Length: 428
Ligand code: PLP
Image 1 (cartoon, rainbow, N blue to C red):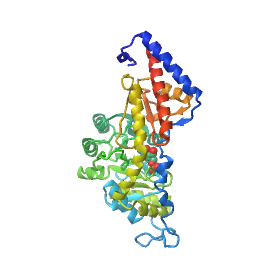
Image 2 (cartoon, protein in one colour; image 1 turned 30 degrees about the vertical axis):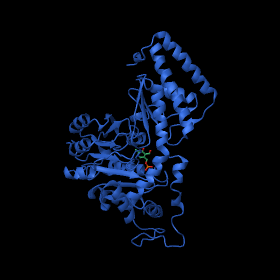
Image 3 (cartoon, helix red, strand yellow; image 1 turned 180 degrees about the horizontal axis):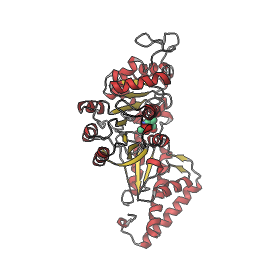
């Protein structure tokens, strides 16, 4: 409902406020700003933290893995043993349950699902692509590139509400128990993109134990932000692979993570983890797709990041740079919109985003209006399947890339737009 009655102001007062906001908006337009809050990527100072990666291998020494593998040559399909060990520690699984890939985990997710469509997965009676219809549950708001994979492959997406504890499990359990065309669910279980929530233990338990009509149902567990804390009291996430094993469903989950926002996006390493049966299937397909991954990159990452404890220290340096940016956004939102009852927003303990909800039916207009004043936001709807936010209210804010000064201005503009569009609805 599009009321801002809580302002407790008369029509007259609201019109006065509107005129004032219009004037301020015009002032910003005159400044010809060029500010971008759409990109969930590290800022240059964050990239500096990993520059040692470029020199950590000594050309005068053998570029050799622990087991003697010459990393400059072909050999090895699924990752260096020391890289598997490092990420096994990060994901709390065993090294045999890990495959280290190329430079992107999204690539591994895409390939897993494409393989499922072409060949089926362990437990499948038919390749998914031979079925009349394949559906995925998509807790939303979520990550647009997950949804893009489904759209590309013709997988029908079903929106599931996201609660502060994860997907609405009543909805998930009901849908999954009655429809064998539902083959998967997308999960960003920690500091989710964009809501910043972490799944509760109860949610993990229910995902692992729920009865699924499809025998070859899979959870796509994209733990992209597993080490990306913003506080020294990080969220804790229950181990999904262990929980699935205990529940007698060891093959139910594919886990993914990467160092894209630990070291260099585009030059990091992608990682997946799953049961032995699942990984045997993946390795078979992988052996046709590639002769092997970039071992040089794996070796320098292991030498640089060393172990989970060292990685934690490295991530604290990231947090020192980006926490003030999150704080500025939150302070500005609170100052401008805190008492207006026209918007709500997330206050994440980690990850890369702040998620803003306007009144229903306002997000598209707010984003368009901000754009006209030189502030680029992720396009409204992007956080939902097919780019369609059913309530047209979610806006994803990416605070990491802009400078503090740029952020302050951009959020001021955004807040003016949220107020103007909300008032417009109220006054029209
Ligand atoms: N998964 C999530 C949830 C993300 O937010 C992102 C990047 O924004 C990625 C995956 C991309 O990861 P990668 O660079 O490893 O492909």
